[in-house]
Image (cartoon, rainbow, N blue to C red; front, side, top):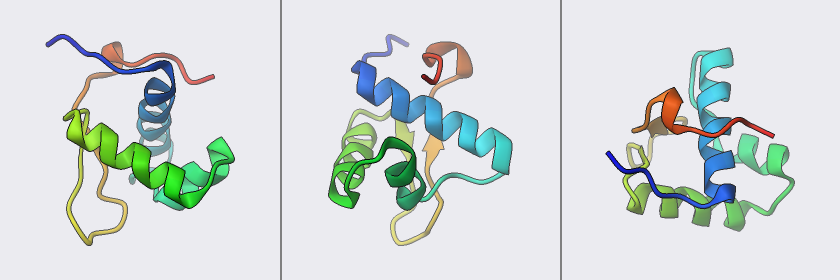
Length: 79
């Protein structure tokens, strides 16, 4: 699979990976908002874009349902 994402998208993907690994459950959009110090709409737009690119999947109306569709080797390091 050829993975194509921007540097910023890669950081979000890496955050989702590590957050899930450390906590045992996926991050909420609010967790990403705090970490990246951006607005709630900015995080939501990013999540929607990652989903459109099939880099993540999530269950509608279910909190903390973000799941990566990439392996660790396809992700950048978290900065």
